[in-house]
Image: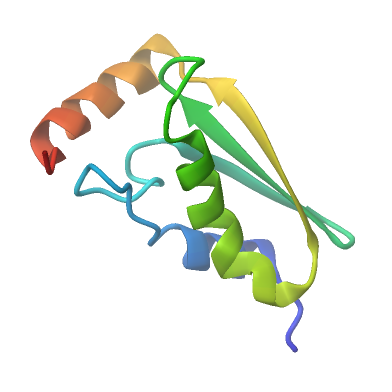
Length: 98
């Protein structure tokens, strides 16, 4: 199996769609960073507020496409800045599937 590079990880994950909004997690600013160090992938998610009911769904949707690489995957969360939050809410409003 090919080695997972940061570029390949971004290409894989930037397509992952939000379950309730017609945008990808990358477009929404939720997928913030991917770091690969040795056999460890760390995905950083930026959340608009601390308690997100679908956090497990979001995490699984990002971890699953990388599972074939047999690397350890860690997920860190940070809160969005006010500017990132505004962009998120604008896109959420545009793309809401509900």
